[in-house]
Image (cartoon, rainbow, N blue to C red; front, top):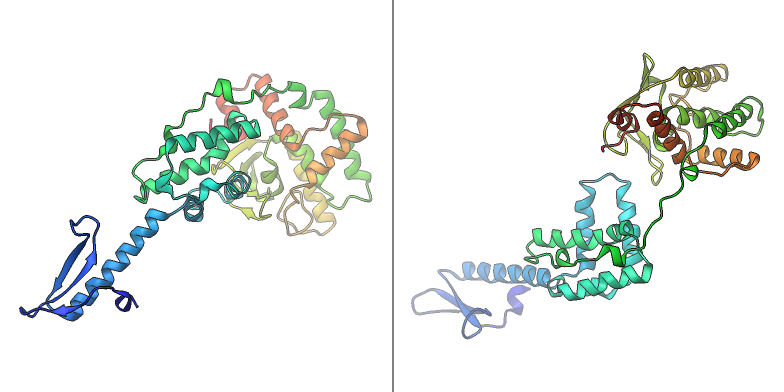
Length: 349
């Protein structure tokens, strides 16, 4: 097909060699000659020329919309599965219907990118964090385009935003809205014990125990749901897996991709033993501590109970993440070394 579409003649000269011409912008006449010893070699050279030119034109004309799925696939190789849906959400919100994604990447100039970024900041009244999350796609896609040699320089890296003037200021929330007080924890524990012992409508029978266990250990909700009896040895909990919220799958790593150990208190160990006895008495045969089936505890259940208990006693509802913060706060209040606190919480820094 390429040879049929070739606009120049193919001929054999007096020297026996075969010749033709192809377009070449670098030549004075806009054309250059290709000479080969045989017709077959000449035809191979013509095909190679068009394939190479085709690829070059495709790269020159490539838009952000065309590059984005390639970059996303590359990004997925280097990040956790849960990170990708967050990126896709940002694309759908800020990029999908923007005209800038359909303009050739090589034509994107600093001024145009600057206006695009500042317009979005104003339109959505962004905080610094929101802007960072939104601009990640543009920033890293153009870095990727540099790696692919589509462009020489990422012009978006030259865009400067005056954070003090442009970003919406975020007031730090009061501590009372971030953690539960000791009195509130006592009340919540009373509600959880009562629910576990007497409720006849509770589908996830061990969820109240899981709720209390999180206050004792500060594990993330996904980690809590996927805890197994085999994770505990000599009073120490090994945290090495989690239930993913978006996929509802158990993966053999934590959010930080670092396993950690948490020393369990007597109260936490008692909850595990109660869960074990319940499973044995009811012939549940689950490897997961707070489940009575072969599947892990469902992601939403602990928060659902927490909301129910808070509403019933008039306590301000804070999600299970605040249970985790309450645990971390209690360690700090007890004078535990900050590096030890980070280790127990699974924080890299």
